[in-house]
Image 1 (cartoon, rainbow, N blue to C red):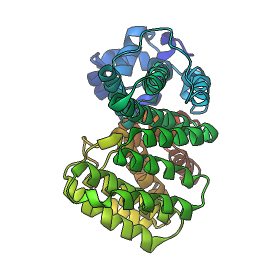
Image 2: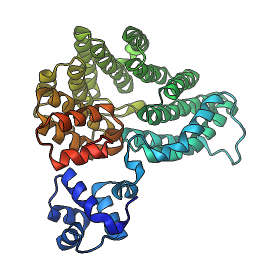
Image 3: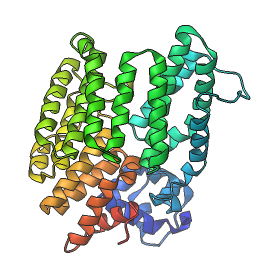
Length: 398
């Protein structure tokens, strides 16, 4: 890791990455422009206080700002302690060991699951990983030891927590563990007695068919789940949200499989459900609503390889601040991919920078971001300092 005394070069790189002037960075960090200028120019050594101020301003963790190995997406040093524990917990899912501490009341565990769900939707994977292991331990014991409605609620919460764990391992590329966790999501949901949670588990399961296929099997799973709750969708906003999310995922999966007509047909149904729901919501820890459907529009065009259509559908639209960080970041990554296909490398860089601003941890782990950044670096005549800085941040050799 670089020391705070060698902060000048990092400030220049990060300022270029964020397209900020020295004055703008100083204003954001609450320091003087003179200090930023002198540190960057090597006339004055940096300090830990300055590094912390810049980190808070740019929403960058201190080790990353100072250039630690954790900056590389493949390192993910914080996950080293979490992954073995998650593997242990999925192995003992139906026979959890006794706790070495009192089991917290279900309402308190429910609050923790809600917090975990928000961390996942906002792409705060590190903080999520730090809280998940003890939470899963307690929920596993609760599901096995409680009875009646309390038992069903414990399984509902356990299904949600397993889904949060899958978000981490999926982003880190551990597909084997992701597959097991997705099955645990389904298993716990089926014990919850909640039709909508069971349908949500099918939504989660379909994600694996983008990697392992075949697409037709994933679409059948989504169709069956939708049929089971369709009767509720016309009167229950929560059911409409889950039903719409199923069709939105089916739309992108069909596009991934090259089935353009089916993709747009599924999106039409998702759009109708979004109109019923109104503003974007996060029932069952799944973001859905009009803005989410718009994100899926662009994603469908990208999966179909139609750059012009993707850019056309994105034109003049910005994800609202209320949209979850993970989904907003996904939109800008998809848009950047389409822009590189058009040769619009400046536009693609702007999109990637916005994706990074919205959800840095999600952007750094997303292969689409690295695909677009690689194209910017290797196809541009003269990649800008901002492009080089972004590529380095993504772990791409420049």
